[in-house]
Image (tube, rainbow, N blue to C red; front, side, top):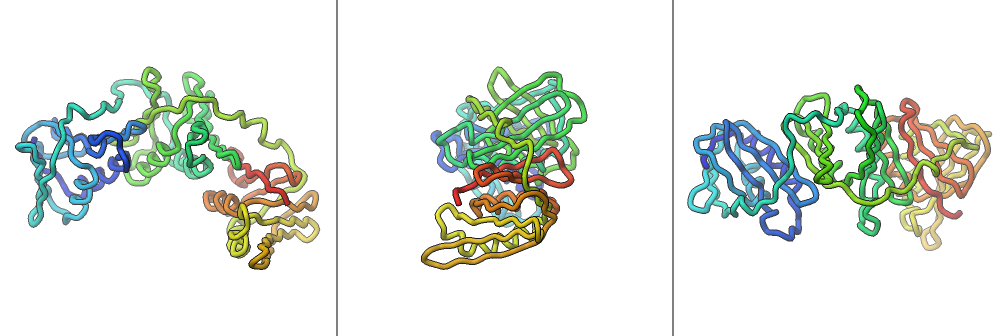
Length: 373
């Protein structure tokens, strides 16, 4: 194997595929990136057995071949080179990469032992999704998923495809986010799949780094229990999570007793002030005192050893007055992931979820479970 390519392109795509390299792989070869040359390009592949990333870049291929090379070390070396031509070759069990003033010799492992990462060709995608819309969905939903493996189904995002819409739903048991996206074309069949949140976060990273395409393609590999997202020159493949996602529709309130139209930034500023005390309270508890008469919401927190504080902001409030407690961390999370300033907060009772919505997007909803006052 021998090839020449541009440093900036090689560096960019190495950084993308190394996201699928495990920090603690059970198999040493999973530390590596699989390189394969042919037809004027280099194919790069990595996997941690849960997700895999495949991509390719153009190159001057002098000799075809394939090999696996330590991914992070290769990426760090190429990142450190100046923006110029990079030469590489695999010779006598060593991968040699060099530029004008620098070179590295990296040990390799046989590509025969590298796990296969699924791909598709000449297959019609299950559907196409707007890059802008799926980016919004990932940002508004992924953070609400669980980060531990106590309940594996909660570490995934439920994707529900029904006709001309696709829903993304995530929950960790204390909160729930749902974003519905309207599709340009109706899906041929209705499908529910549970995708690891890690895969969607990596997809979000790819969308921010690669290409100018307006749409992403989604393929379902039912025989492998996998899903594949294709964007520009990058494929991301992920296993699907087995298990039953909680029945969430029944917990989404259909009405309210108190409605607040408020500024996200003003809410966040009050949270920052109140959190000075609330972060020392068990569960980061703070209290919202909603006053429709004066169109004011007062946030307060009390910690026995520290003291107390409060902060007030205004809004357009209708309905009943109410005092309700939430975790300041959960409130900060949702406000930090909404990309609109005009939001709606709805609630009914101290023991029922608080509901966040966006004024200009009826297809988004976020629930936060309250705490005991």
